[in-house]
Amino acid sequence: MSDAPRHTRLLIIGSGPAGYTAGVYASRAMLNPILVQGIQPGGQLTITTDVENWPGDASVMGPDLMVRMEAHAKEMGTEIISDHIQSLDLSKRPFVAEGDSGTTYTADAVILATGAQAKWLGLPSEEQFKGFGVSACATCDGFFYRGQEIVVVGGGNTAVEEALFLTNFASKVTLIHRRDSLRAEKIMQDRLFKNPKVEVLWNHEIDAVIGADGSTGGPRGVEGVRARHVETGAITEVPCKGFFVAIGHAPANDLVKDQLELHNGGYVKVEPGTTRTSIPGVFAAGDLTDHVYRQAVTSAGMGCMAALDAEKWLAEHEAEATAAAAE
Image 1: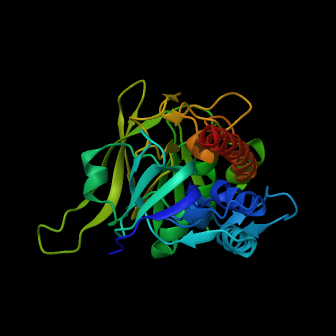
Image 2 (image 1 turned 180 degrees about the vertical axis):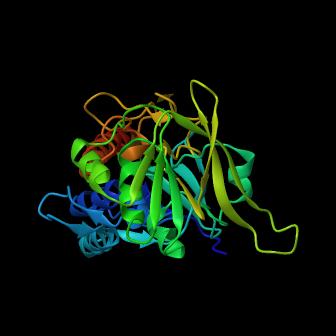
C-alpha cells in the first residue's frame, strides 16, 4: 500500500492507441504525464491479430504495435504504471483517482482513454458457459477449438474478422446474423463468403447456448446453440464446441458515467473539433468518445488532440493561478 498521493500535472487513464499517443505528445510538451494502464494494457489491439489499416504497416500484429507504442511513450518520458483506476472524483481540482494498488493519484488535468469493451447478449445460458466455451475474444481462445465446430454471432467487422480468424483452427465456422446482410466492410465480406469453412445463418437470433453444465460429474462445456428465426420463430440447433460473441463494443465509461455528459448510448460527449468534456480540465479520446469511426488511427489522432488540448488548458489555468496569486 502506498500512503502518499502521487501528484501529476496530467494523468492519462488507459493504454490503447489514444492513451499512448497522448503520452507521447504530453511528454514532448514537458508535462511529465503519468499513464495508468488499466486491466488490459494496450487495449483492444492486444486481442487483434493482423492489423492491415495502420498507416506505414501493410500488416502488423496488434500486440506488437501496442508494445512499440508503449515503448515510444516511455522513451519520450511518460511514466507508465501498471495499475487499474477504480474510482475517479472530478468534482474538485486537483482531480483524485484511486488505484487498485492502493495508490491515490491527484492530477491538475485528466485524459480519459479507457476505450471500449465487448458487449454480451445477456442470456443466462451465455453467462453459465463463459470461460467454458463462450468467449468474446477469438484471438485469446480460438486455438482451444482445433478441429472443432464453432459459432460466431454478429454482422459487423468484428464478427467477420473473428469468423475468418477462427477458420485457422475450426473444422467449420457458422456465422449467425439477425439480418439478411452484413454491415462489415466489403473486402471482409468477400473473404468470408469465399472461405469454404464458413457457413452463414441469416435472419436468426441466439435463443440459448446449450451444453453440459457439469452437474452429472462430467466437464462443463458448450455443445451447441439454439437459434430462432426472427420472422417465423422456427428453432435451429447448431452444434458447436465454441461460441464467440462479436456484437460490438460498449464504451468503458464506469469511472465517469455519473459525472460527465454522455450521449449515443454512453459515449463521453466532447465539444465538436476538440477533446474537451463537460468538465474543464478533463479530456476524452479514443473509443470512449467515438461512436462513429472506432479505428486505431482515429484513436491515436484523438490522443494527440487530447494532449495538445490539455497542454493549452494547463498553460492558461496556471497563468490565471499565477496572476491571482500576484494580486
